[in-house]
Length: 117
Image 1 (cartoon, one colour):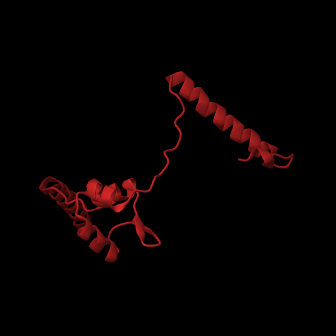
Image 2 (cartoon, rainbow, N blue to C red):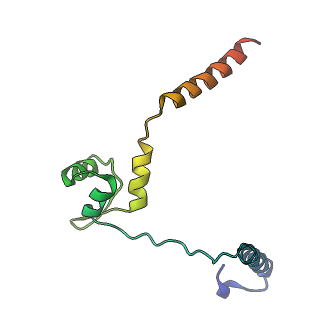
């Protein structure tokens, strides 16, 4: 909520916003924590992207060309965000044998309950 937006019509909304903010501050004081500011997302270049995901430049260029790797292009230069690269890596996780067995067991139990009716 913007301070300039406070008027008689939206006074209840402004008060609710202030109460919410005071509650957040109260929780922080009780826990003895300093308020955390949101992290700035700073773009990185291709060299840093290579280091983050452990791939060579030609591989990165190929993944970008196939639109498989999240990136941004301004002019001729490619930019990446580290959190997006890490999310890209985790999205390709292969399930362990134990995870596959657990899923199969859950699915088997669901189907066997439906048959018994």
